[in-house]
Amino acid sequence: MNVGVVGLGTMGAGIVEVFARNGLNVVAVEVDQPALERGQANLAGSTDRAVARGKLTEADRDALLGRVRFAVGLAALREVDLVVEAVPEHLDLKRRIFAELDHICKPTAILATNTSSLSVTEVAAATRRPGQVIGLHFFNPAPVMKLVEVIRTVVTADRVVADAQALCARLGKVAVTVADRAGFVANALLFGYLNQAVAMYEAKYATREDIDAAMRLGCGLPMGPLALMDLIGLDTGYQILDTMYRRGGRDRRHAPAPLLKQMVTAGLLGRKSGKGFYTYAKPGSSAVVSDDLTPTSSQVDSGRPVSKVGVAGEGAPAADMVEALTKAGYDVARGSPAELSDVDLVVAATVDTPVVECAMGTGRPADVVGLHLVNGVAEVVHTVRTAPEAVAAARSVAAQLGRTPVVCPDRAGFLVDALLFPYLNDAVKMVDAGYATVDDIDNAMKLGCGYPAGPFEVLDEVGLDTALARQRQLYRQLREPGLAPAPLLEQMVTAGYLGRKAGRGFRSYA
Ligand SMILES: NC(=O)c1ccc[n+]([C@@H]2O[C@H](COP(=O)([O-])OP(=O)(O)OC[C@H]3O[C@@H](n4cnc5c(N)ncnc54)[C@H](O)[C@@H]3O)[C@@H](O)[C@H]2O)c1
Image (cartoon, rainbow, N blue to C red; front, side, top):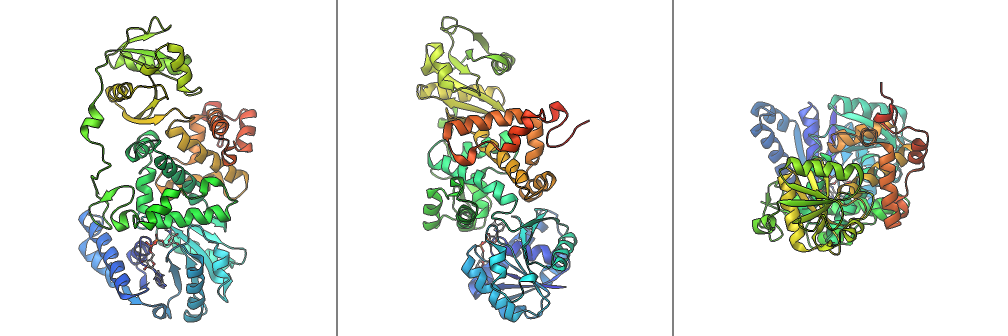
């Protein structure tokens, strides 16, 4: 089988590698000679890294490269059996390319688009063979990520879908086949979250380092959202969000954060241009170098010494906090304002109510920070009354507790939950809409984005009642229609399907 790839940027070069690695002959096409040379360099860089890491022998690399023929212009694709298009995310450009491919490629050839958010149906309609047009959505980096979303439109022939699924199997990929809807499965769930993280950064809610650490260490994600945006490319990310906003029901959470457009205009595209939210050693490099936003050690390490800590708050969270602080060697006090009078710092252990309510009850709100432990991170929450010295002191307490401190303001969900629960809620809405199954969605997020667990595994683990409570809290505070709890989530909680602890949630347990 001979295949072609059009566009050798972030995705196309990786897709060429996947094909050639699995023994297929590939015609790799770019728009002009300089772009072709960049594409060749992308492929050479990636395969050289694989050799350096011991994942590929030199002989296999040479054989792989020997199966790739590079060319400028679509005319080189006359003989291929399948083409994957990976040019920028613009509908007009893709339609123009498909119309040309339709004339150039042999009549039996399958034409596939790697689009993330555009309508495969509209792309197909630019050809005289819409039954042979399909979406093959690879994930970044294509050689690593196991998922391919196969998008069938209402006119894609069954045989073409079967051929595409068989091809994925041959490439060692797992195919999830879905209908043509903006963002398909993974991006529809991912991009609302990425955009929200960018908006938080833009609003100076937290630093880039803290936003990323919160999701890596708090949720076990392989990358933080801003580092991931840099990998995806801010121009591509912007286009995907813009299309999802327009095609996906104008959910304001998909309206691209204004900062994205500004950064794209300024040429800050992420790794591929050497600078995005972070600065990289050189264009295309994954090595982050420090820049003027990198926190200095004096910013990180300062803070008054703390030996006695007061704990404010009720119930299990406060009891757990007392235990954690005592274990870490602190002298701990609880109770009335009088009992807290000689402590160096007061931490409020609360997630259901604003920290400032708790702080006002202590009689010394300047010394109160919220402290919320989520796996490897401690969220350090400052209220409008918290003194900067108290935040610095709380950071050192967090470190003493063995957690990475992340600082954020006193808003519903703080940092981790505010980013996590809307994504989980969106996954429930997707099942409720009948677009994809619980298993397909969990697989898509694990195999496409490298998440350690799918959203339904997480929901069953944390408890559907907890998820519903958090989501209601976010919705009440922000009044954003897209944050309304999914009706299916409410129904399952009412029915007692609370997750693993109840023996049944989105799955059943022994
Ligand atoms: N970046 C990601 O993480 C990601 C993940 C999955 C899917 N996608 C999708 O893949 C597609 C490509 O995205 P990307 O991030 O690789 O973009 P990119 O900007 O990195 O690369 C696009 C490449 O297409 C080339 N190109 C432009 N016009 C061309 C033409 N007429 N003929 C041949 N080549 C042409 C450009 O020179 C460039 O090298 C988009 O549809 C995007 O939505 C991107």
